[in-house]
Length: 119
Picture 1 (tube, rainbow, N blue to C red):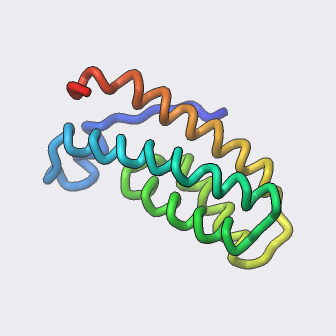
Picture 2 (picture 1 turned 90 degrees about the horizontal axis):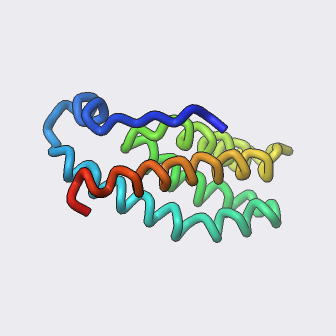
């Protein structure tokens, strides 16, 4: 499992400061929900080694995680996406297991931080 750290203020600064922290946190909430919505399809695709679906869902999750600064999650999605796109033999299940760990860290962090943003 990776060391998880996320700083909303630093992400706002990285984005140029033109977004309020509460708005960014709301976007993170949407991202957390989208992970929950997309993970069953990704899990099924990984279990059946459906590379087309792994590529599709991996790409979607990669983009949204990159936009919010969840770098470890993004990197794992990119590994899944790129290997599936290029039809490579790859440890899809092992990488998906690491992605689950990252998902759990993000969800845990989000749930701990919600009260700071009035949620």
